[in-house]
Length: 103
Length: 103
Image (cartoon, each protein chain N blue to C red):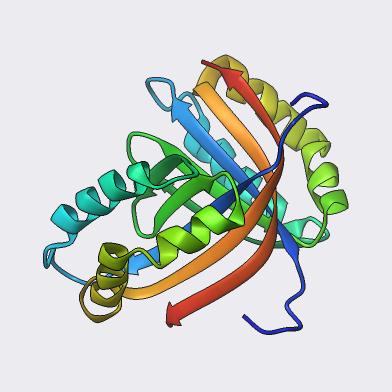
């Protein structure tokens, strides 16, 4: 962390999957590659055991809004509710401080 | 999301493990139970595949600071750097909006 740290945004997506793949893996890869092309996209981290956590990072709230309304992503959101997730929670967060160990 | 949404804080802990357990599982459970006893603790979610993501939620920045400086947790942080993690990143975030699907 430095004194000139510039805040950015994180979207914490926590989810529980339904049984079976149902086209999830393919769409997940597609959404990742589409997100990377969005203006203001910084990066994404994902992990899943019992619960899935995906955190995507964005330069500002506008970039998050644009991604939420992107046409293909809207289709994936719909499939998410009908086919892939029994539950999910989305949190929009402002990253205010950050520090790191190792490399 | 409601208009009277009250912001709270998230600590996003992203990490890469070293090889072997080295006492990690036991300490991890202990830290979870200690965190739950901290004032201002709201909850925690964890998942790990190639990368580990743990997000803990707190009522305010003071609660996060207190947890960071808790004696047993300080010992775990030290062991984290010497034994358990080859890399980690900590982000302190203000949760500004939230929505959910399913239950």
